[in-house]
Structures are given as structure tokens and as C-alpha cells.
Amino acid sequence: MISRYTRPRMGEIWTDENKFRIWLEIEILACEAHAKLGVIPKEAVKRIRKNARFDAKKIEAIEREVKHDVIAFLTDVSSHVGQDSRYIHLGMTSSDVLDTALAVQMKQSAELLLKDLERLRTVLARRAREFKHTVIVGRTHGVHAEPTTFGLKLALWYDETGRNVRRMQHALETISVGQISGAVGTYEHLDPSVERYVCEKLGLKTAPISTQILQRDLHAEFLTTIAIIGGSVEKFATEIRHLQKTEVLEVEEHFSKGQKGSSAMPHKRNPITCERLTGLSRVLRGNALAGLENIALWHERDISHSSAERMIIPDSCILLDYMTATIAEVIDTLNVYPENMKKNLELTGGLIFSQSVLLALTKKGMSRETAYAAVQRGAMEVWNSQKSFKDVLKADRAISSVLKDGELEALFDLKKSLRQVDHIFKQVGLSDHKMKKA
Image: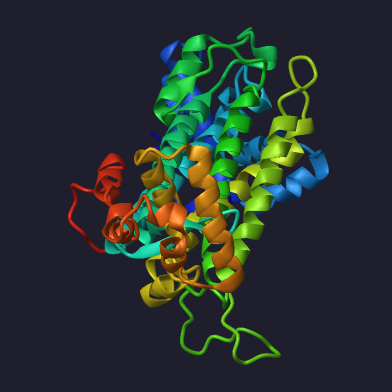
């Protein structure tokens, strides 16, 4: 692994200082590999390791003149190294440095993103267990469907975040690839052992084949993985936004002391954080699209991908780091209102048990078509009159003649509807752990 500096935070990963440190390490490691082959003197490598350094401001000034970032970097480093600088960048091309360093930066970012996702999963696990049996109406098409629990919603997000962990682990493996293969990737002026040595020291695999650059399907996979995870964050945030509507108010973003919701309306408590996350996820998808466009380059290489990558890769990593940490905080501090959940559950007068009645009638021998028509007839009456669904069914002779009072009452039991909650929690891996604060 890189020995010249400690692992930075996400924002620091994408600074020029960090980038130049990685570039310098790549160049020094290449010199070490050449020395092992006897291409350059070992004593020269020791001096290079001792004296090599850079000045980011000077590099910037040189680049304004030469219009080439790697040449500007090498020029500045050479001013510190002196005569031994003739051994630096031996047989290499700019992309050997650029692409390998970018791989290191993406690897560092992916490792931090994995930690973010694990923290999010911990929060989701704790709150899913907290509300495991807190009943809430399930909605399909935005309309009341059947009972579920708020814990099951969170368990679903926990499971999805687990898939996102695995996606990021795979993307990490995909992008942890470097190259030191020279112009057009033929090793004409390099021994392949140089590439192996440098990549091994950096914690990277070597590309089996490269064309002066690493192929951009690797980067596209990383960016699309980030976009998918951003889509999950948006999904969680959107659900919270729906559940915070005034007419619903089953959950609510924490509203801190002194916070203001509107410049015009002092009463407002808006889901601004979840709305912000929803917007940022769109940026991640746009960046992923640009990454896909970068796959097709001219011949062995061009640099049409480079300008886009300087924005989309750092921005995507930094954004997702922020988004996962933020949604974790939102869920960790989320205000949950079980009484409102109960009140909303009862809004339709028991219509949420219509399938239970339908299936009970068919078990008694009634055809599904006849049973469906009878239950729907009663349901439509409830929609239009706001009567009790149970009372309407009791008054319907076609139903009451088949289902006795006790049988009909049992169909409206929430415990029956949610008897498999423990099974579902077990399936997603949430049943065998004690509750603990994230």
C-alpha cells in the first residue's frame, strides 16, 4: 500500500495535493522497479526517494505555460531531484501515472463509501427492530392496500442497502486496477515487472491489457454503481417525504430547535433534507450517463473522457459520501408517530381486509368471481358512504349466509395479517441480533 501518507477523508482524496502525492509515489515505485532490473542505479533511487517532492502552486504555474499537467508535475519534481530526475518517468507515458493514480483515488473513495453504507445499515437495523410491530397501512398506487409494519419498511431498506454494499464491493474490485504499459500499451520501453511492482505496492491488480489507458467500462461500472446507490437513497427519502405530508404525518424529519421552515409561513416544518437528497440523486444519474459515454474512445486512446472525469468521478464520490451519511442521520433521528399510523389505518373503515374476506368466501365454496363481486359491492358502498366495512358485509345476505359473525370478526384481526413479520425479519438477517444504538 502507499507508504508516504495516511488515508484521507473523501474531500481530501480528490484534492490536487493528494493526487500529486500519488503521482509521486507511482514515479518513485517505478524507479525502484527499474533498479531491481538493473536499469538504473540503486543509489539513484535512494536519492530520488529522499529528495523527491512537489509544490502544487508551482505545478499550476508551469501548467499554465506548457498546457500539460503531467509535464508540469515532472518539471517541478525534477527541480527538487536534480540530475537523478533523468531516471523518473522512464519509458512511461502520462496515462500510466494518471490512470493508475485515478484507480487509487477511486479505491480510496470506494472504501470510504463502504463504511458509509455499513453505518447506514446499522441505523436501519436498529430502527427496524424498534418499529418491528408498529402497524402502518401499506399503500399501492398511493391508495390504502393491506396492513404492514413500519419496521418492515425499514427492514426492506436494510436489505436493499446490503445489496448496495455488495455492489460497491464488486465495483471496488473492478476499479482497483492499474497500468504501467507505456505508449499504446505495448511495453516497448518497459518491462512488465515494473507494472506488477508498482501496482502491488499500491494495492492494485494489473490490467491484463491496456491501450495506453485503462478501458472506461471500468469507470462506468463504478459510476453506475454510485448512481444505483443514490437511487436507493432517493427511494428512502421519497417515502419519508410522502409519509410527512400533513394529511398523513406518520413520520417526520427531525426539526431542530431554532430551525425555520419558511420565510413566509412560520408554521412550516418541511422535509427539506429528503428533498435535497432527491435532487442530488439526479446529479449522480447524470454523471453515470457521462461515464457510459466515455467508454467509446478513438483507437488506442483520446482524451475526450478526461475533462468529464475530472468532474463526474470526484463529484459522484463526494456526493454519495454526503448522501449516505445524511440519510443515515435522517433515519436515526426520524420522528415516528404510531398513533397517526393507527388513525390512518382505520380511515377506510376496514377495507384493508377485503382480500381476507374474499379468500374466506372461496374457501367456503363460493366461486372467486361471485365472491369478488360480493366483496367489491360492499367495498364500493363503504367508499361512497364511509360506513363500517364489517357492518356492510354483515348486512349482505350473500356473504352473511356463508360467513358467520365469529368467522367474519376473525378476518379483521391485525395479528392474523402480520403473523409472518418475524419470518421476514429472519429472512433479511435482523432477528438474531440484539438492539443497539448505531
